[in-house]
Image (cartoon, rainbow, N blue to C red; front, side, top):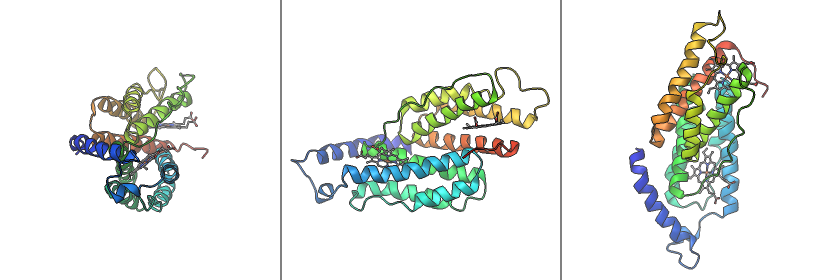
Length: 243
Ligand code: HEC
Ligand code: HEC
């Protein structure tokens, strides 16, 4: 699908260029574009619900995830948004609606991926979208908590990579994830449940795959799989999150 996005986005780029020249309105639809302020307000609402859904999924909290996605599904584009934006909005709402009754982490993650893809695809074709500041680098390597911050950062960079879309974010996130060590640099401590070690390895494998994924569709799918791996291990270990 993404192979087709480039020509589509170039077509939109031309349309957007024309629309941004106030002396040359080319159609009523473009005259009625939402204002910058309306668009930014709509995006803040999307962003907040979507990133909180992403966090809930990482934590393995399905109830919280479903609630955030229901919230996201309740947000609408400004009424004057051009028709060309609507398919992406429909895609976003379809993903969010499916999420509200996701019964397991895998299904939940595939809906999260669909939503992130809708964000990125719309930003790509409207030439709008966020400019993400780089998350702070992970500190204090060497213990589980600090290691966790590193791949938490990598997960955020991958989110930026898909939703931005950001080539830089994706590449940095993939590198970070491929180098993930949950149990420190050495082998996992003796007696660690082998299924946890497997999950740690799965994260690195997904990071390696992420390095070679090019299309936005493939990247969104990998991002979803990654979040499943996070949430699944946290559920298995019973990690308590403060928020
Ligand atoms: C239907 C198209 C569309 C969809 C879907 C969409 N966006 Fe946007 N987004 C835009 C446009 C257009 C802008 C640029 C707004 C502006 O600055 O005028 C934007 C801007 C943004 C910004 C920057 C706002 C600012 O403060 O300048 C963020 C953050 C954002 N989007 C996040 C998201 C997230 C997260 C999603 C998915 C959950 C999403 N968007 C889905 C069209 C979309
Ligand atoms: C192999 C199991 C495993 C996987 C996979 C895993 N985690 Fe964790 N995670 C843990 C454990 C164990 C803790 C508790 C660490 C502690 O309290 O020292 C934790 C804690 C965390 C914390 C809380 C850290 C803090 O300082 O409070 C965050 C955030 C986190 N993980 C993010 C992630 C993300 C993002 C992913 C997926 C990219 C992920 N984790 C994948 C086992 C895992």
